[in-house]
Image 1 (cartoon, one colour):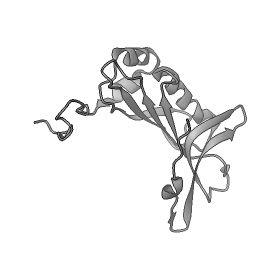
Image 2 (cartoon, rainbow, N blue to C red; image 1 turned 30 degrees about the vertical axis):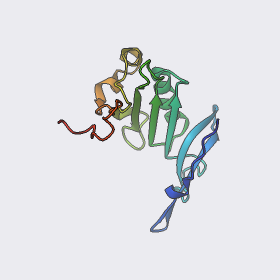
Image 3 (cartoon, rainbow, N blue to C red; image 1 turned 135 degrees about the vertical axis):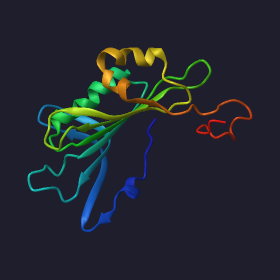
Image 4 (spheres, one colour; image 1 turned 180 degrees about the vertical axis):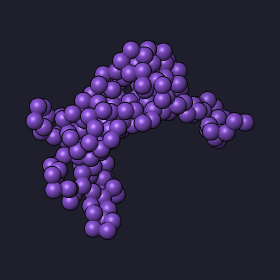
Length: 170
């Protein structure tokens, strides 16, 4: 099934600078990739390709493992020289209890002209913590994600817990 979003809310003018919000296929020198969301400057610098983004986001639900999703997102940087930031949202399958783990990873170039990519932040934000099955592959392939991983409090799911704030310690 297809989900569509009204992305016009992301497009704004600020002192004559515009962002183009889109998603879909991008033909690059070596391959064609489909990004879920891209932000491109409508008035790029003179040496930038106006069709290529500076930011993109990937929303992956069950289709790739965490380590494969990490490799996929890192793979954008050598293909798009002007790309500065990639956001990965990875949702894992539901457990028997109906809860699920979810991971957000923010990648960025170490410097604007650098080939080096670093994990700026990583957050577990699902209705349950990331399972060992989700974390173990990352130990070998993506230790940088686990080193940065922050755990948000789990969202209450039981009867009578809906009114509790999951960020309160009490």
